[in-house]
Amino acid sequence: MVQGPARGGGSKPPPRRRIPAPASQPQVISWRFSSAPAKPSRITEPITPPEHNAAKDDEKAKKKQPEPRVELKDLQKSFALTRKTPVEPPVEQKPEITQVKSVLDPFCVLPTALNREDEQLLQFYLTVVSRDVYGTRSDAVFNPVRDISFALSLRSPMTLQWMLIAAAGFVAGRRGEGPPLAIFRRKSVAYQTLRQKLGTSPTGPISDELIDVLIMATMTESRISQRDASNIHLRGYERAVQTRGGFKKMILASTTPLLFTSHLMPFLICEPPAGDIVLGPSDARHAFHILEIIAKGENTIDPSELHFMPPDPNSPTSNAKYEPSLKLHLSESLRLLLASSLLSRHLRPDFSTHSRYALQTAQYLSLFIILTTLWRLHGELSQSKLFLNRLNLSLIRSGDQDSQGQDLLTMEGLMWITIKAAFDALQGNADNQAGLIVDSMSALKLFGAANEAVRRMLVEYMYEMLSEGIDRSVLIRNSQLAGTMSLRIQDYGNFSRDIDEIT
Image (cartoon, rainbow, N blue to C red; front, side, top):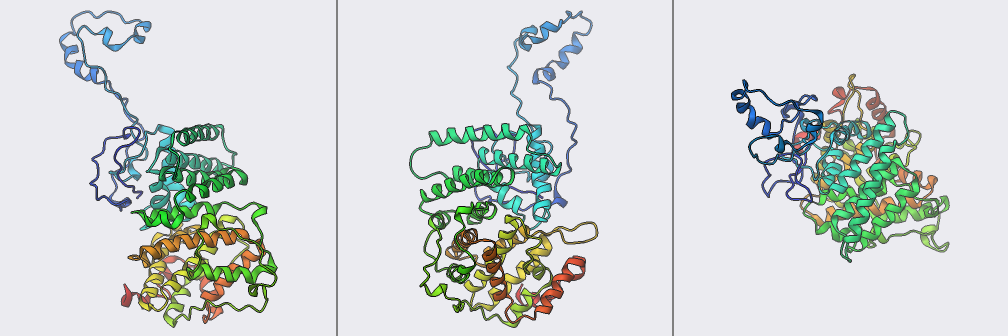
């Protein structure tokens, strides 16, 4: 069930009356479809003005008295002028959220009122996009739409507006249509609001609210507009982060660091312009060397200021004989966990099915997250096993299935589940969690600076490091089985032996 944090205050009153959550309310509340209230009927009774209710008894007493004939033109007059006794002015009726009630946490308060079309779009985004884009269940333990995108949108009316624009774009795409005029109207309003907000904001560091808006605007434009539009937003977003002292400083100052994984979104989905691609096949070894530095957490340049250029021909890393220095030396139990059917299916490079940039970055980042997390947990076998166990179990518990029990989890869904599992594995170490997000951004910028051939080499390079010592035939067999078998048959296939001793 979709969930969301309670909010207090805002530029507009809440769209419906809710009991405010206590101050200690977590950012995202757990909820399940099984315990959700029954979905209300789409046909709602018209709201009766308060004066009508107060006058019902009077009407019975005056039944026998002749009533004056009411002409059509009289209906345009104020209701108070047609009564013989003064009454209180009518209470202003606020738009009630009726269609999305059943998929929202009862304590969730939206930052602005929604009309009926907005309600339908929000409900579509929270229920359909989660399944279509990520292949995750709406009631999963972790759901990227619910726990990241929606949680981010609850912090500002402007951010929520961009989510509705994205939903409208998805609806049009499912119908095989181009962006309708309604999307352009919504975008016009969103840009005008953003322009006004920027004009009235004090000079200095950009607020969290505006940075959130830039994230959602960048993501939305990258899905429904031309590449140039999203890249313009991406440049502005990086400049805004620089005014705050960089990504790591922002994350460490936050009380909800998980929400800062949303900062990965612009780098995941925005394909860089041709002018930013500077690493070709002859620079592959140099790219491997940079990737190792980032994966080890040794990069000191903030991603907002990180730029790449071709290596010096005399550089040691440009030599074809350069040997990688990052060695994981995984134990047999960790290799078994990495070779599990469901995980190996998604991690094995398959460039034929991952043609879109967003799918390529998703597989690349999934491999990078596993690689850098195992490196950060180097020497802590129990924690490393716990990380991979949680990852495997989360894939099963969060992934959706079709009517035949086939796995619907997409590469983008796998990536977000991997990020959450790594974040949990590093729990208690805020510096490591912040470093994980920041280094992931740097790795994505490296991927964007490489051409198609080098991107494939980077993916294969990380896969080889993770699969070192594992029989390739086992990986291929498990990968193929996961694609043809029901999840119910292979739920605990290759990693059940480690569950009891770790979890």
